[in-house]
Image (cartoon, rainbow, N blue to C red; front, side, top):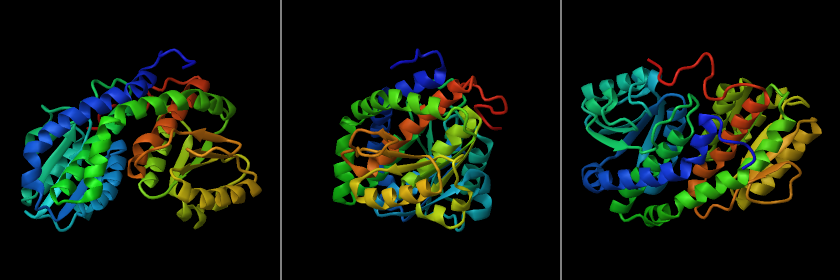
Amino acid sequence: MTASLRHFMLREIWEEGEAARRTAESVSKSLKELTPSLSPTKFVYFTGSGTSYHASMVGQYVMGRLAGVFSSPVPASEFRHWASPVSSETLVVAVSQSGESVNTVDAARYAKERGAKVVAVTSTPESSLAALSDHVLQTAAGEEKAVTATKTYISQLVAIYLLSSSLGEAKGREEAGKVKGFFSRLPSQIDETVKSSSSQVERLAEEFKSTEFFFILGTGPNYATALEGALKLKEAANVFAEGFATREFLHGPMQLVDEKTPVMIIVPSREHMGACVSLAHRFEKLKAPVVLLTDQEGWERCILVPPVVEQILSPIFFVIPLQLFSYYLSVAKGLNPDNPKKLAKVVR
């Protein structure tokens, strides 16, 4: 690590491995009692705001893959408009670090009024959200002082993966048990990812410190990673950044690509490499700087991430270099990544 831990944001990224360990321990205990009552669930809504909504998007993917349960993510502020039907057969997983986000609390209350069962994923068991929920999965990330959420996002993902794999395991789904078994190794692999990414990303941030516009592309569950990476850049580095599903980017947004718009492409596995490299060459012909986030060497500008044993877990790992890039870009621009001037930790 070349920079001192002079900001809370950087400290909290370096704490992500321990936050994941504590969260896995806390949530696993809760799920032993909770899983039997949730096993009959046939439909799940995930809801949250900002970073917590991006965790909800990953939730839809893993709930389907691991538990075989159809689910849908809905922004908490839109829950009353988009979540239909909501009934006693519905499970709502409400995600909020503070448990006080007014829209998420309102969404949970709306669901409860219609008979749905509500599970809160929150760091704060004494919060308003926890009080009105049927069950609480406490993320044990510890206090997060930076407004820009990092370790709490990782902890939310851990809780959602464990919830999904526990429901899947109860149904005898093989992949669910396999993924759940990987969690003992998860903290050390997160630590390794932070360590290996840090210096690479710091150099990249210095190169792009005058850039004001970024695109981030991801596919599968890493579409949510692209959105979260773009959000971190907006919050911490005060730049315009947009995340897109990789191939959807070709349907209009590519018109904006030029030498002033770096394109960062998340490539979590070898099977996606050929298609992503082909896209990268197209963007280079338009003079755009291209950065690949990958575990495969061979690209001029890339952030190498240690190989991920289970690809379904890639959103946990590939968001880390994007968090670090947002931090280092903020510092390179002379900003304070801990306290974006127009934002607050809790939106009420």
